[in-house]
Image 1 (spheres, one colour):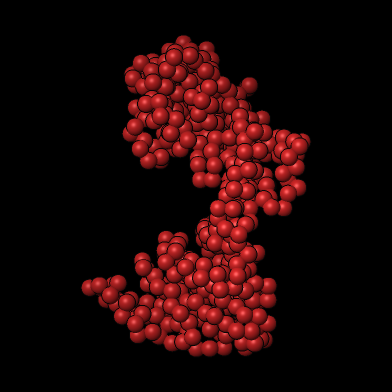
Image 2 (cartoon, helix red, strand yellow; image 1 turned 90 degrees about the vertical axis):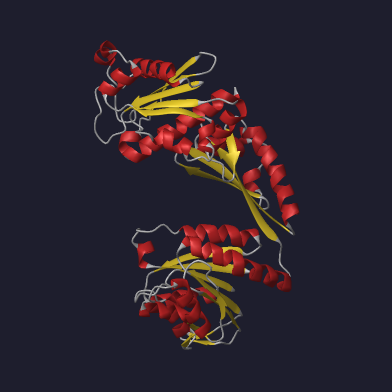
Length: 434
């Protein structure tokens, strides 16, 4: 089964909303053996929505739409599907009552009853959370449309754009339906992917190592291996297609072992792992507590680590000592050191971390001070100059200047801070694994 995801909403086109639904649906569809061939985004315009439906109907046999199912005048998905199929929407009395039940004692705004209208031939996809129901339509080849006739059988499914609602509806109704449909059609199997996550290496260097190896992984069709990069990280995605989950996982495992052998020094995790999450696991495993004294990162390090569930098991004290006064008064940084070297210096980072260790009682203390931009650069201290000091349980001190010569030209203030925080977490992870 081949699928196209059509995301509907002008807010997606103008960049106000990120299309996270396409990512979720692609992962879920591929996991059950549906090949996603296209992603389309179209605004809240009936003619253009019909155009998108018509184009998709000629190249896939499953169309999934997201968005445009709200009660307002710009929510036009079901109206557009009805117009494309030259049919009328009919208010479902059952859905009307469900909407009234969900509003409980409140008066239902009249515009919400629009959400109870569906095509007579459609199966309703219930919404366990909100009032926007979806439709499931099974259309035969030869069905008349506003653009001609369907050349092949087609399944159309509609979902709201709210991710929480869409995910619940897909899991409860669409996924079981599609799994059964694949069995009926004689599925080609399942598609399984795994990400091998790395840091401390660039995407190009990672790819070069794989390219130069005898494995020829990049030349394989199944499982395929492809390189990707995000801020401060890169990864290899392994994708396997097989008759069932077990067989696909075995194929992936073999490729993963090859990658581990080539790039094991840089691998920190797999799939949904994050650097803070794997660092947290290492800290809990060793029963160690961590403390931060942050300047330029402004608490971002603390946020990343406390975003991980169970943070109380490894968090001791987190401080944001942004001003020179706070560095002196709270951490005991000497005014002479600040005057001689400036706040952004290895010397100040070292005094910050030693002062933090005295007051926190933590096993590991970390300090960071730097220039995140877009201004504040000084002679010999350009934007992206980030000094870090780490005091480990054995008393060893580790210092580093995380300077990137391209940061002032390419990275925003937020990206400099995020990159610094990720690199510091990865540095801690590597120190613990030594």
